[in-house]
Amino acid sequence: MAQHFEKHTVLIVDDEEKLREILRLYLEAPNREILEAANGQEALEVMSKNRVDIVITDILMPLMDGLELTRKIVAQDPDIPVLIVTAHAGKEETLAALRAGVFEFIAKPFQEEFVCNRVNKALERRFIRLAEKDMFEILVRELNISGTVNFSQLSYLDRIKLLKQVTNVLLLRLSRLEDKKDNQK
View 1 (spheres, rainbow, N blue to C red):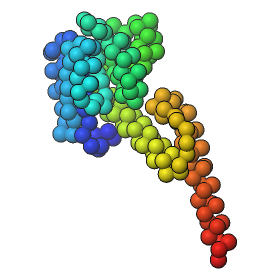
View 2 (spheres, rainbow, N blue to C red; view 1 turned 120 degrees about the horizontal axis):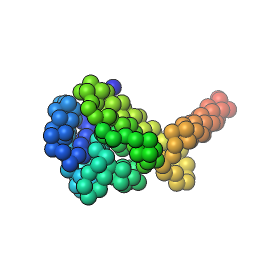
View 3 (cartoon, rainbow, N blue to C red; view 1 turned 45 degrees about the vertical axis):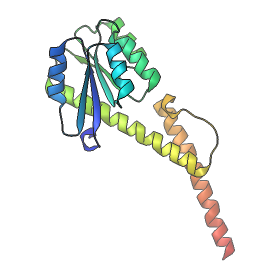
View 4 (cartoon, rainbow, N blue to C red; view 1 turned 90 degrees about the horizontal axis):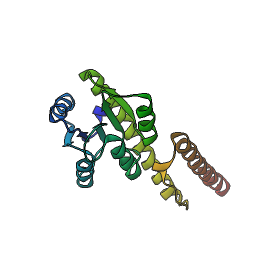
């Protein structure tokens, strides 16, 4: 479904140029920009200059590995999904990656269809989360509700609860307006 949205940007991070090339070929599409970086530090530089919707990274790289990169990305924007490509996904590594905020693993060797499916799923999740965030901000602004909530930092369940509360406030205000109109008649 993500392919139906406006143009989006994928950042591929791997110290192996050949793997970046393969992933780029798999993921090229008219509505998709592909950016590349050879390590985590370079990836953060690319992200500081470009809007990135999804990151696909190797786990073992020089200068900054995929786990540290994931931690830094999630700290900046938890709505950017990070997919880790690895041939070595042991139990401890998997747990560390999940704690860091990894969206999903892609095991090497991988198939084009699987990679494309996982990327589309991650992009779909990103666009849904961004739409929820926009809806929340619009409702809060239009209803003139005070308070500061970092919507991106909330769990999915807490986001739904908060949207439900804001929607209930909206329904209550609409009901009062209707009652006021009825009383004026």
